[in-house]
Length: 281
Image (tube, rainbow, N blue to C red):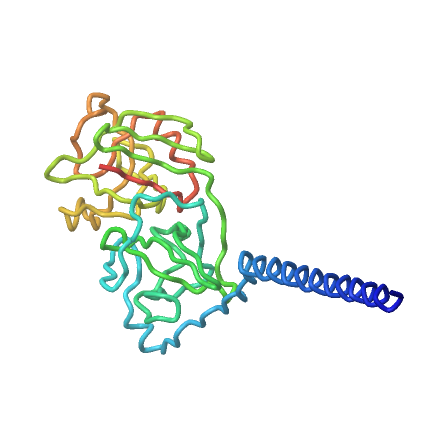
């Protein structure tokens, strides 16, 4: 009887040990699976992308490239892929002449001067990559874009809190600051024969030319008439300007420019150069 009781006790001890081991293994499996699931749910962040260096451009190649201005055409420029999207207000100014590329590390397509119409070049940024910015260009065709290398420290960045929207069907211009509308006015737009071009563009310059009686200020944009290759000695640049006859507002009457009443002209005259302007049909 004594031996039998001892054997029973031994069996119980062994069973307890086995149970403890099995529970430990089960807990290890549960913890391992939990850690594995967490690793699957939160993968490690990829390392930051290294900036792509710009392609080398020889002196001869540089001289052969077109200048990107309101007077020129950059035929190899990529079209704007989001012609009605707003940007975050980022604008950039080249402190020195910049080469424009089709893409980061890609071929050179133009040269961007530091000034436009004797005023500093400021362009809206529509895409960024490490060391690069994609900008809207002031040259033809409308909606042209290009990449400039910003990793050399020869650019200046700023931010415009403003945006201008022009609705051609309503013939109305609205100004926004930080996403909030600050004013809206009926305007005159282009006729069916010489329509105001649609898409996003930007404020290129603010001019006060002598001998112009219809507006104290003319604001050229980074877009051009699709019908007129030239107008009044210029390259057919579309602009915003005032108009003394109030009867034109709300009608399609111009050669492509947008005619503004005085309060609207006052509102847009002091906007920062490079401010995005989106024109919807």
